[in-house]
Image (cartoon, rainbow, N blue to C red; front, side, top):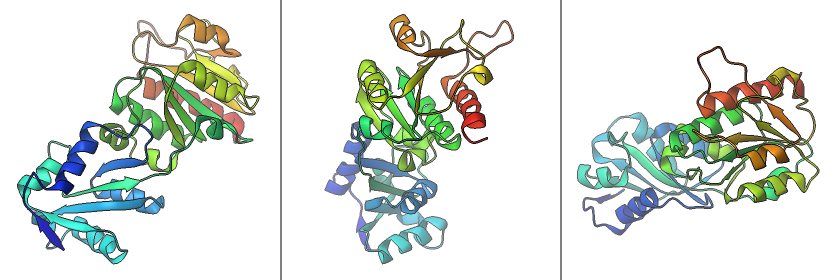
Length: 265
């Protein structure tokens, strides 16, 4: 196993560049920690390169995963503390980092499934919230997510970490305008249900069956009036006063599971 010690090493710089500027298509993802690396392997993602902290080489879960990766033909490096700290984007590095390759997917392909239940996310700017939303979407049976408007990059290391690996399995497309995402759902005959702060049906009163897109707005203003007007139906989560809003990932979980009750019985 090759050992690197300098922060200026080209491989270290490859990790740092991906941490600074995530791939907008999600073709390459920066992973920190054993859990995400194992999730990537289980999802069939190719591991481009991995690095283990030299302190973790002797006997650890990181060392075991690193040995498996090496046996599979992946380039695995050992990094001294200073170099490893530069490769890991987190404040307290776990001991294993990797760059994984993922096949990008188009918005219209996500919407084309006969059983499509697509979450359309507009202007969710916090990557941690977006990652948690992706996790809730996968858990509740969504078939894909379209990330649009001024949303955070779902392929950033923070969002990937927040998703707990969901972004490795769930079809996700990003960098879209809201109109473009709506058109993708409509292009295959899908209906659109938009989450509104007031005036919509209760979650269990909505018809969630068939090819469908669920529109969710970001922190603060939510969806625009124009987007709400373009939807086929509105849904509003009942809340006890004085609470007027929920974290977008929590709202997504409530609505996705309301849909699941109808779609899966």
